[in-house]
Amino acid sequence: MSKRALTVSIGTDHAGYSLKAPIIALLEERGHTVLDFGCDSSESCDYPDFIRPAAEAVASGKADCGIVLGGSGNGEAIVANKVKGVRCGLCWDVWSAEMTKSHNHANCISIGARPVPEALALQIVAAWLDAEYEDGRHARRVAKIEGA
Image (cartoon, rainbow, N blue to C red; front, side, top):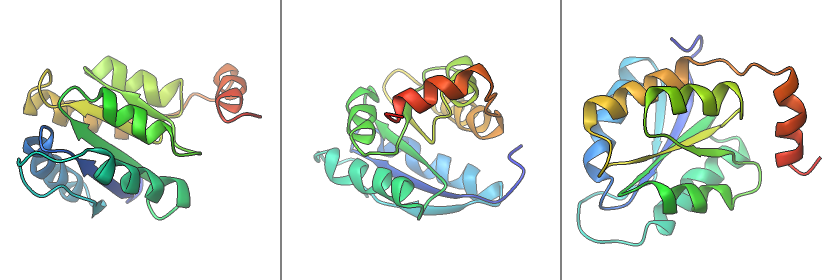
């Protein structure tokens, strides 16, 4: 389990909306604070309107990390990764969540609600939060991602 209380931003589109409440409940149960950037229904919307503010909260330090949700998670990861300072990994299982944290030092994850059922999404979030960045040989690569 993550060792300290975090502030976690969350943003979703209509397709990912069904995962938002269960993920927020998990985060709050673990003692984390959630910044919810919407959306607030399953009515069709444009995901960048909700994903970009969630990612910007991470980049600015308002949030320690972020979770973005959509149908596939692909568009959401792309939007989040357009924000300088955000490293968002698309996660489809527990292993991908652990790797994106331990190897890529991801400060944001994206989950697709269409291919990932709720129970697995909760396991993905927990695994990502609990994983530790391995640093070492990965630090050089993360620095290159950041343009250093």
